[in-house]
Length: 134
Ligand SMILES: [Zn+2]
Image (cartoon, rainbow, N blue to C red):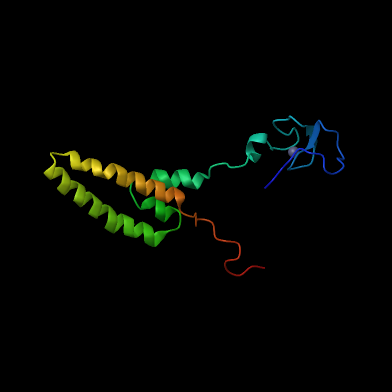
């Protein structure tokens, strides 16, 4: 969404005042918090990282759990039960052949799982048009 400070329309308030987005109380335009309610400038900052992303990445310490957490249950189960054991088996085989170094193969694998779980769509919250609405 585009936002400019250009006064394209008449402003009902003086330039150094703003309205609280929660309760409408007039505040100085540089106010960090509302004195009437619990609004703070911090809370309305855009591009706030979603908590679910951080949680999903954390859960991906066990690959697949983060995907399940985000609502991708089938994908998570496949990663957890199929891909991860296969990757670990290959890494063990590789480490036998390479005096232990093959286990390092798992590091990029874990990284890829975490990157993927961060990138996939969050399906924790149902879409508004899903199911019956009033
Ligand atoms: Zn307020």
